[in-house]
Image (cartoon, rainbow, N blue to C red; front, side):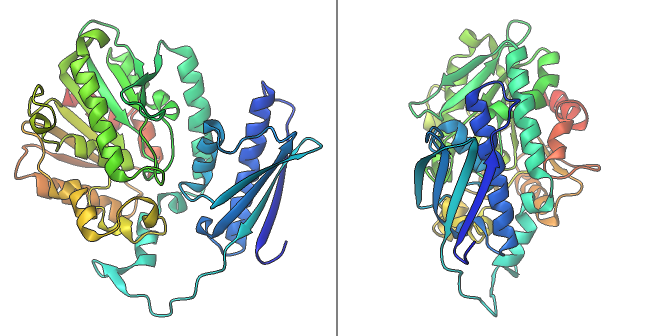
Length: 392
């Protein structure tokens, strides 16, 4: 391994159900190994300049959604400028990464927001770095989500727009005119998928609710502004088609985690009649927003800030729910894992302070013993499930 190249390999296993699963499993193992090598070399994913993917017969396509989903699971939205695919012999996946030049050191880093430097903001908001086993959690969620989809009645990949990512999975309620939970996944606007979250919402199905679990276009191919537009279009579709889906349009709750919490807050502070004159000002009855990000200025200064479509402070402010006005009559619960950073706790407290002048009874809770990811598991059964059901 030279200073500017990293080579990793992963063997194809023998226990996968199909050849495709075998290739994808080996690809993920190689990606995890590559990430480890980058960290060992003191480099970040932003250093990746070019990646060559070698697989038996060249059959693994890194641009296919299944592989892109695994890439984002490990690396988020950081992608090499170029991908190449090569065919090899033997039952192995190999990745050859070319790294860019190391950045010049910054001896005296200036404060950029609330007295914090960019490095301090990264440390405060780096949810993955704070949870060393996050990749194991993501893998467990993905596998559990696949089993959940296989075991439940669900209408998959329903369209609310033309892009392949403008889709949602719909789980019908167990009774007519069921309440609806519209759930928006996290992933720092760059990663994750609706398929990984159904199992975290099983308590709502058990309670008779219907579920709409959204996908949306991801950064860096899209911007956060695009994503706000996406979730608004999804809500409009569900509200207008409520009768066809067997849901009560007067009992809609929005749930979101992390970046999904931000997008959920954008939904409940949308001027709906201005967007769609047929809609009321308050189409959403309640919201449960978990570990949400409601002030986006610090995100501009993070290592992935350039991927989000936040070129300046004005754009960040315009997309920050902290400065918006919530819909009238909204019932709102904000939750953060007890073990999350002070910065995440501040985000929810500050939104409650700002929105408190417009809404009554905003609740902010710290979920004991949980971090940024384990807090979501209390939505399946536990404190967050109780909170969500009580809001309706």
